[in-house]
Image (tube, rainbow, N blue to C red):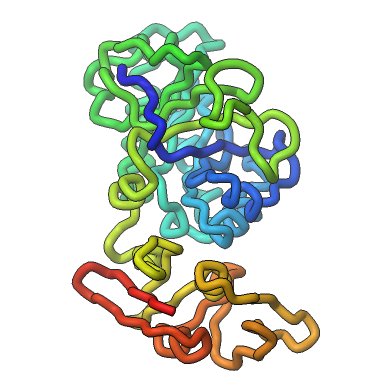
Length: 317
């Protein structure tokens, strides 16, 4: 399989084992995406999933969800798929996920045959696709990946191999879409030479997408999704805005940062402020303050234009 690239988007995966996460710090440390544990088996659901999902999205991190498979039969696999989708629904629904729902199938405690492993995997994946309307992805280790037949190669691969050496080809896949290259203790390192991520205490799994952040967004942000507007400030991509009910909204804080304006939230007044001036017209979406295009131009003192064909907002100030 292919090697890593210095331009590839970087990500992490998180479960309750990681404890509290400061998602704003995670995003500021160059992390573009995160996979969050939602569920395991027929009944278990990760108690931190919904909170992490909301906070990661609010920080501008692209999010996906995964389910750890323990099924020993096709029927059990379908029940686990229902549990997975139930966890996602309880957290706000599949539309809050930017990345594909993931089947984490990485061990075989029941000593199933390869045929049985493939039957369980196929049953889970087809059930998730039917329930969610989204094509799922398969996560596994490089050694365990050899159990899967070529028919499962139709699903994107998220591969675990804690090494600087690329994963090896297997029957189902000759390339990875995401590579978990470190568990925070061993394997590859980030471009800065470390395995730590700001905002996460202790060890954290490190992942990489087979492309840049822009390519990641192009691949997975649906045309009708919320975060699909590029905000270009003084010819540099500064943030992603949203289209809701035909109206374009821009993230106030990121606009202010790009233009050198001081933006803060006053808890007593329940208002955002830009350079000491209250912003009266705004919207709170997923915990983030947004303003309309026209209002942004007026309050930030810049020239703003909207290109509906390319879904880009150009801001000069």
